[in-house]
Image (cartoon, rainbow, N blue to C red; front, side, top):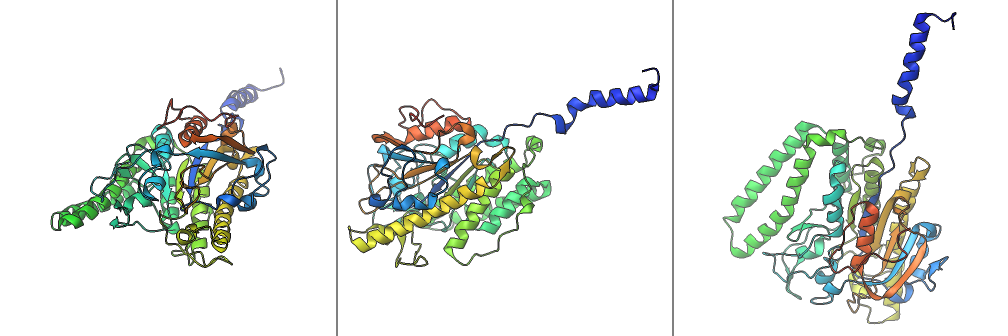
Length: 436
């Protein structure tokens, strides 16, 4: 010790005292839990959907075969339903309320009302402040306005599953490139950009309000529909300009992924790019909550791009038990499950410490109908992918008593997400055997 100079001792002490504060020696923060809902319209061929066995090691049914290799991450949930949607028309009442578990008001568009907030937005209202984007709403088909004359409901209901209030549907992005640019800007905020967006929104709202004063009653209803959707953008812009968000740091670079092309040519390409955007948003932690609609209710998307399919999902779902239509129905169901499996595989490939992003995610996939021919809301086809940060007892087929509330699943997911609620809609409690 006598041979050490005073300077050496001080230098050594400084290093020793500094070690506990070095980032490399700090205990890493636990990865966040993410949650997404992938909605498929028009139900399923029930004969080829439900696995034959229960518990672990269940055999995949024909429609679920694309999940091969992901069984340990996949939880098939059977016999749930939305009792509040067991009324009204064939589609809008059931499909718009898949995440609210409520009965919607029958309206031509002036006074839309879900009578509840969607489950994803309950999570966003509790935890959305932790990321630049409280939630991300994506779709494929453009917004539909006007009234479906067959049933007397506004088509706006069929374009949204995310509702921040009973009367406020959240606007969806349907262009993958726009989604990418939004994620990039959220992860690398510039105050001037947010201010420019606010000025643009003010201009759009001003023009819409002036237009509303100049048109007739029926057109005013359409403008009101438009305004109800645009209003959801206001809170997002306020969030972008919130100085408190400066504490957030991305977990991965958004610009490490190439920007998607402007207009993907096929439906399949658009879907894959949208799923890529969800994966990027979750990996970068730009948001932890997302919804994606494969199509609107009564979707007009044609599936002739699939070998052996000759028409739209909606038309084929009205199979009238015709064998060939049921065969095509299964092919369309399998394609959707394959897209779900694609997202799970992508998240599984994203390393996060000793685990993966999929380990810390809950990706719910399903439809608001079981058999599309009868518009049946019983025995909803639902699958959850991921382990929810270890909170989900994944890798099972869980068959519950018939007509167990779907809201019980949402109570369980909100608990695993870190936004627990005592009750949601008509819930009677969490699902047994679902949480680890």
